[in-house]
Length: 253
Image (cartoon, rainbow, N blue to C red; front, side, top):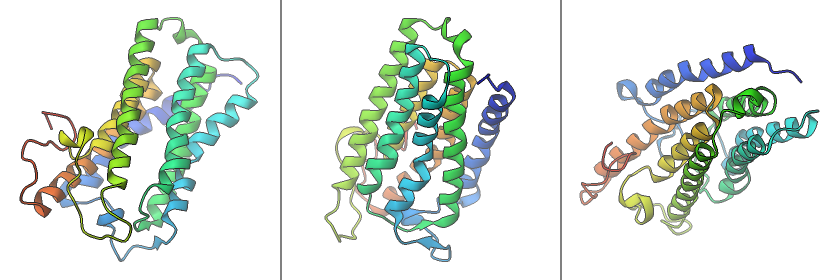
């Protein structure tokens, strides 16, 4: 398959332009996220939220695997490694994380949007790495790849560890909210979001491409407001909430 440069450009710029719009939709003018503890009871929500999490995220795992198995040309080791890191994240996000979450209300319209985004982004990232990155790959240094993959690995560890801490925060059936403790939660309220953003920053550094940079930017615009909203929630909920703890970026924001 030849590189579809027009498709790559369109999907990449859609994320770059859609990021600020997503940020405004989540945070601007007093808006709020629309799932979990903030779900609007008037929305049509699905009951089996664990299954919804899996279905909406799994295209970002399956689409790259299908393209990898169906491609006629062999990708280089570096590109295969990068595609593997992308799939590794979504293996966790689609097949492991849903069964660790508590299954709070999840609006159907958000699930549909997430499914579409994961499908298109999975196609964008994998198509670029498999069919468009041959010339650019020669310019990548081993140091750049090492730094990027190190950041990705650190972010993945932080993300999974933070999800584990949140999952163990309350006992089954317990409804009382508690202050997250341990790990990166000692520095930021959105430790899991910080970890995921760090993952895609590392992926962007290692890949050094417009699609990866666009995805990283969109992720930050999507998760950043959620971290800020969680931070405000904790500050309002707990009078003894650590004053030194930031929302998303340690010591800064």
